[in-house]
Every structure is written in C-alpha cells, then in structure tokens.
Image 1 (tube, one colour):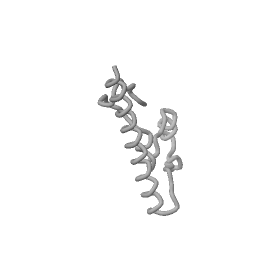
Image 2 (cartoon, rainbow, N blue to C red):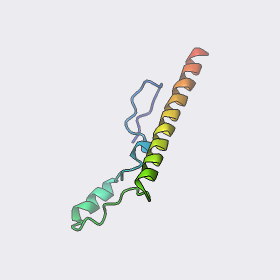
Image 3 (cartoon, helix red, strand yellow):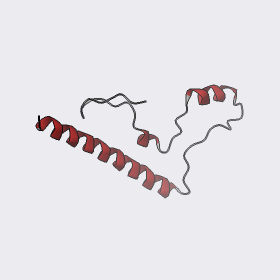
Length: 82
C-alpha cells in the first residue's frame, strides 16, 4: 500500500490515516461483495456523532502532517550532516 520513500519529496501513494472515515476493503472483501446481494458487508468506521467523527478525522490529518514533517526534517538534517 506504500511506496518506499528515499527522501521527503518522494511520492507516497496512501497514508492509512487518510482513510479513517472510510472502509478500505481487501481483495477478498471485493470478492465477497460480488455475492452480497443485500449489502450487508457495507461497514464504515463509525462514530457516535458527526462532531466526534470530524474531530477524529482532523486529529488523524494532523498526525499525518506531523509524521511527514518529522520525516522531512530528519532527512534534511541527515543530508546536511554529510
């Protein structure tokens, strides 16, 4: 699901934190959905309220931003120390 990054400017395909509110099915989930005539396999990450879901999504977004900044700063300091 990820492309290995060599530095902070490389492309990353997907961050799992980005899909907090959505289900990310596997291949077998896709196969099972073909025969799921009543839609019983449609499961999403649920929250008690809309506000709670928004808070968690914003938190996950900032966690992903923090991880990216940390990676870039680490790469920068590593390259600068050479």
